[in-house]
Length: 229
Image (cartoon, rainbow, N blue to C red):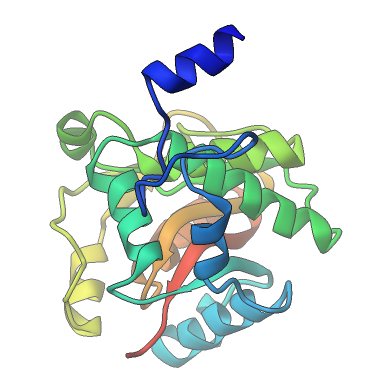
């Protein structure tokens, strides 16, 4: 009764299509989730991600394991949802996507990690945005997998602008020396988490720092992978 009245007075709507959410739906309606065109197999997104990293950075940079939920294009419903997460302050979307990403990883039977690490923001950018969307996603993954979230083992040492629209060479230059070890040590099997991967420059740079400072292996997990238009 009280919950129904609250929903009438303060309706919850899908952040993408603005339709009222049904019972059991959170932030995004089931119709819009269906329109995100999830990869058909559990390994398909990760294989696409690993292939693009191989082509750009060589075999040594390719993670042994990788997972991704959706192919990403710079228009459409998924773009609107990721924009809302990153720039419109709707950070609960991060936890929602993270749980779905965690469920994907869990379905492959490879979810035992010593640490789950979000790609960090520079401190100035975090102040500007007030939160790190990748940390919210990683938190959702950690909830599902039951692995510890580690946010202080790697940090952003250089304030870089948006990578959107940059060439591969420019992205690489942006990432030169962009990360350094954090105040906490790291070891064992690590899962590195981000929102969207395009060339892989950011995640490769962060993973390199993690491997240099104690991680035995670094797997990648992202919500979406930018496919060539």
